[in-house]
Length: 225
Image (cartoon, rainbow, N blue to C red):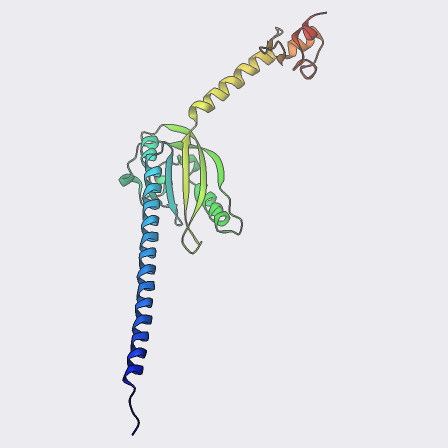
């Protein structure tokens, strides 16, 4: 009758137990690492949400069905609507003036095609938008795609800034420039180093130099005989 090697069975059992304990320790380490990774992701998402909520810019997101998904505090201040009043509604019902409502869905579909394509890029544009009180503002907008973990397009983000004041100043400067250019008087401007920086048509007629010839030249070279 064969003999049973008790010591051999014990050693084999001990090896199996040690291997199992090693596997358990590796599994525990993996679980800890994954938990820490998930926690870092949650912290990053929370931090990003806080940044979006606290920024001065109006930031909102739109679903693929062209409905508002999120609306930060900046959007509340800019347009006068709370998030409760806007989420789930279409932009045409909130901030798009009536004259643009018909073309807005088509432009949005073009953005979706761009963002879902092989080389998506943000779209920068300017629009006349409308506040809750009916007043209008000139706005600059940046539209970008929002993507899920599988890199598929899930929505569109919009960053909106009020540029009404800067546009007003641009128009005022253009109006003043037109007045200067059409004046019967010779009007020029000079930098701090006494070089010509502007030269209107009357200056060309009076002094015999074109603006191209005069601008950048020392003032004494242009007005002195």
